[in-house]
Image (cartoon, rainbow, N blue to C red):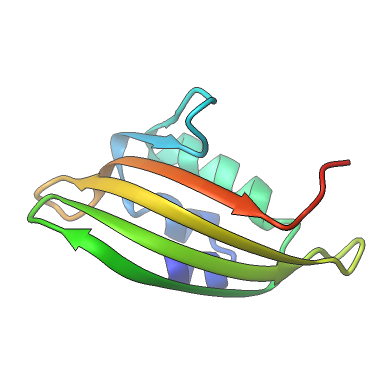
Length: 113
């Protein structure tokens, strides 16, 4: 995920998910369903990010599920604002290694407008 995000590749990001995967950006929104929707929504979000830096650490891992803590920093091209985000992700994997479920909880320093 970090490589795809760093390259701002929605297609690369979506390719990490199964065709029927569910991706919850927050616990309060309906999930994005399927790799096509995940690709589209992620590409839209990445369009307003530049100079992306991403890192993560695995907190828990079993055969088909894991929990990671992730951090990212990027700049907004329109304002030059430097954004930092700190998050936790829970994922379940298919035998293919692609994600069938990804839930994340995150917070950033960017103010809403």
